[in-house]
Length: 267
Length: 298
Image (tube, rainbow over all chains, first blue to last red; front, side, top):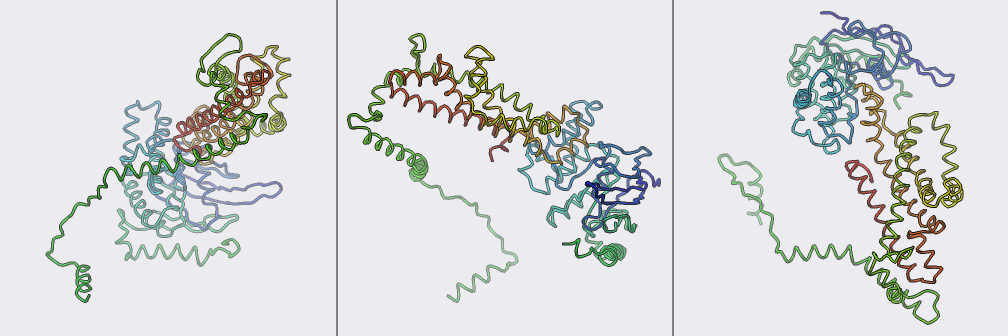
């Protein structure tokens, strides 16, 4: 498998505020293969979101480059669609309209009107939201909003799907349900996914590899864990799986034994 | 007692083989008369308090102004004096001697032109200084000073500039109502969540698409707050401006009535002005509610 579909090369990021410069990220080197599901995990403030935003083109790295299919990433674009933590649906548009605004722009020249409509509905069906297509965001639950956010991102047919703590704001049951949906969609479409998470179980359950970040400032990649679990994965069977327990222990050990947050930063 | 307790315990344990019959739940239908009574009670609880307060006010007024030589007429005399003005709002005796309808429509015409101009220019300027830090730094100090100038202080200058009463009145409306529109719009644009901008960036909307599909809809609640304040201010300003420029219009009507000592006409005109101002405010609020899909006016 070609490991260099997506490549971070010596990424470093400093924020400058007056005379003070804070180095958030340094020496990030990471290659991701096509179709791979990679999680970024680390304590708060370790620059996970910064790294995702650099890949998304919303931030420009101070040093280093990101390459996608060999091309330098230097601006936001639909080939790197983002699922935002707080869903970011536009409240004045319906569920349908929120997906359509992306579809109309991305496929405006390649699909005709009815094809675009079918594509919007297809993606809403993928996340089981087709029946609520006429609702506005304030009329649906948090989990449903995030489903629409995922549908909007998927509808852009991104080369890489970026997810910034997509389930962080949801309750445990809804979260489990959405994780299953994401696994199912990943199995069907074979997307390349980079997901940020705080949740060890989520990272191990969904990912092919878990990238563990050291604490900031000047955070970098501490360790990369290969999750050797066959797909499709079932959360019930995994509860007693030895490999799952090993991966989970490895991530926990990294986060809480070796890179514990100093009490000052945790407060 | 003992038996009742036993049976309640037993019913909590599923009995194998027992089938539960599904009994449809029918909400009890209350008699029509009872429902009507409840509705009328609700209506009364809303309508009665203002009715009582208004009646009491009129009563006190009547008592205070009844004695001969009172400076203001009591309500009964107001109605009697101004009866022609009240019952026939459409009369037209030529000149400025016209019914309330014509007076009010002339004033509303001036307000609608001046206010529409203010809305268009105000939203455009508001978006500009909301989006551009440079424009904000340049224009904001000027606006902050200009907006404190009382509406009538502009009138002599605009008369000098336009050399005509009609456009001068419209200009006074414009310059009075534009400030809250500019300021609220710019605050709205500055408060657009970064998330919406990120969405626009990822989808790669063009500048124009961002304006139409993100900036304007996201700012609509703020714009309508500004428009509501603006329409109220312009209705305040038109009456004062018309008193000075003359011609047909509710403002000059009041001034004319004062000069001919028709105090009752003045009082009726004030009631009309209040009602029209109230309706203007409600109109803008309703349009705002409709345009922003219920997000505004929260």
